[in-house]
Length: 111
Image (tube, rainbow, N blue to C red):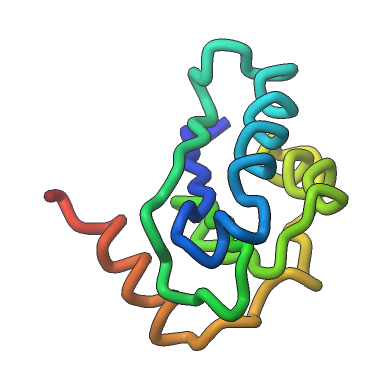
């Protein structure tokens, strides 16, 4: 399995919507199959800039941008991250494509 990075937004709007709990629960779900985060790293991200669409979660290098994520979505997201399921289409395509592209450009950067 490819090493993956999963970022959960912790910007002001996402935090107010509960991104801290989403981060904790998603990390706990992933730890069940990858306890030492050797294949999948769950990290916080300062802000993706898609505040109206939060809670936002991204998966890299897959370049999947999930929006309006709730705790109820986490089992499906975790299954996809672990390679046991498909991307959760109902949570994609909600933010502006240029916002997504800025995030991918930053994550692709060697700096």
